[in-house]
Image (tube, rainbow, N blue to C red; front, side):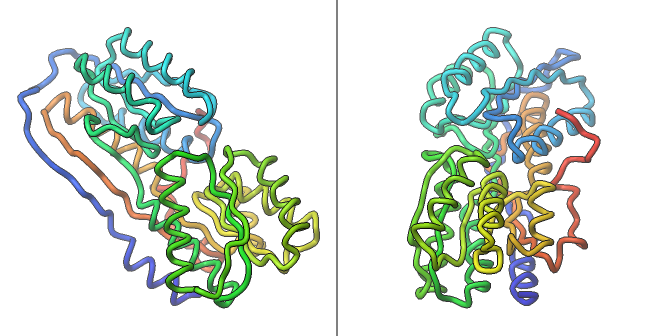
Length: 328
């Protein structure tokens, strides 16, 4: 496992940036104060809190004062809420909008309405499916699925039954992670079989319920892929309650403190982790640089990294997790 961690770390430690840098005639903004809107799908989810911290903290570094208007849709199933919130940001005539889409396709009309009215839009994490977005800031989600497959493949010694709790349907990040996991199993661990897969909202109770059902239906199950930590925690709780922690292990992404506890206890074999704080910083900087200097960066792909019990204590979390004292 140590060789696996070192190998993946060497490949992925470098920040990968795919960009198109142009200079438009926007010029320097004349106002002393700018207003950015930040539309998030679910502020209570573990993924969005460090991104929010990264955005907020980066804004403090700019020459101009930037006021941040934060709106929270309340979940990936609340597209109607997010559409109304973005419409309100347009009416407020904010200088830029940062957005994590509740629906890649469903949010496009209102996003393109904002762009048409001269408001640049930066996509964060779950992207609007529009080529008119100023900058797309995201992680290598396909690579995250690959890392998770490597962790479970190593634990299962290349054979056995696994299941997938794949997260919300129809989002670029969930689909890419799931594809990375499936493709890597097929290529590197062909004797491992996916016996069940469920697309589901990010919900610990839902993951717990799924695991209870799957442990009855698949008594020989050895591993579970989960799209993010909240789903992993629910799965682990069900596994522990069924006294199967020595048999079934979980792989996941973007750990919370409780997820890290389960990692160190051995219930979770490994995480693929995004540099979420860094993503927030890049999104804020991309919008600001466009407004003040006319700089256009079309896409930023941040590297993903593996965390296991072996490297958890020595890992540098500064670009990954918000400070403990930060409260959104």
